[in-house]
Length: 455
Ligand code: PLP
Image (cartoon, rainbow, N blue to C red; front, side, top):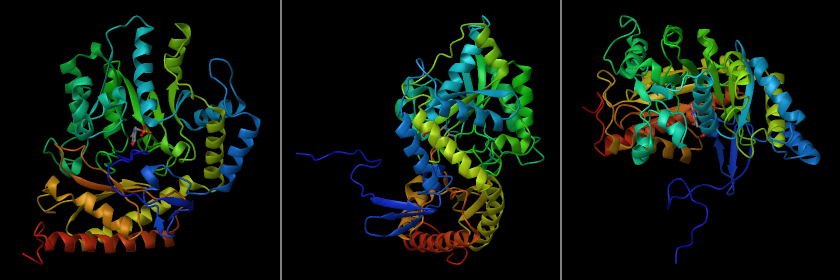
């Protein structure tokens, strides 16, 4: 008889049991130390074991942990919404709390459709997106996700929302070269809108920097300005999925600030609670809220735990910690420092095709041939191998595979907590250097990789 309790991501695999964490370090029950080089899933932005957050959790629990949102509100939830609205750009002044990034993007989808319905426009029900994107795992969010590997199994249940090519200069799907291309990938959105029909489309959703499906793919500077113009031209709302990039990760509170572009809706999650509680949010502009308030007055979404006071108190403590320790500023400075080191590694290892990112959201793409940019075969499992070598060597990095052309592409994300120091980055780079060296040897030994030195 099978003894099965906690369902792990890969059945039958062993996972270290973590006993505690402090700062950028995690420790398993055997006492082994791991550097959290990815903040888990780009989540633990303030590091582990922050006492002030535990204290805020305790204090709120001693007052009240749960009230239901249709019966009561709480000071913690009101203050958190005000704080987020304060940081959000333009007229994005209203905040709807949910429990995960998937719920935040799915709420954005619903709000966008509702915005048009309230005005009597019933045909605008699609939210289009790009290939090489990830917006979450629930069916609505997955419908928007251009992540082939994650869609594959449920394809029959999903809407075909991914329509446009991504701004992926290193492996341009349009086979163009920047800047000569004139950012054709943005024009591709316009062609998709015309093909589908603008009267069918409520919104366009995009990650400012493509994360889980591509490995910190940063668009050309002109890209989002053009996208904003196209959305306005066709009366389509613009949703920024900042679940990974938001809350200071890229050196700005919201990554869209890098290009001075204001979306109509922003989804956040992950770093908002820094992993201390499940919490996410959809931030909505006055333009949209005014219409809903003049109409049905009800945002048709919500969960039992939405606006949970316990979680709100935790998020307030996380943001307070970020502000006091200037973590957004540190992300910018340390991000540049990390990027310089990654560029040095790129010179050393020809299988590093590209290094990219902003702030402390950095990506490395591995290729078989740095001249032709030919990817490794998926069966070579380069990313899996590297993850496992890094783990053995005491470093966590995050896989970003499966979302690109077909199922190929090997990328990782390096995204330590935002309070990482220069010395700690040097340690991360040492382990990464050693691990990529081991990976190279492993691939050559198995005849899966030929470098100039061995050819
Ligand atoms: N959106 C983006 C950009 C993400 O990176 C993720 C998760 O990786 C999600 C949405 C989904 O968030 P969650 O896993 O919290 O549901």
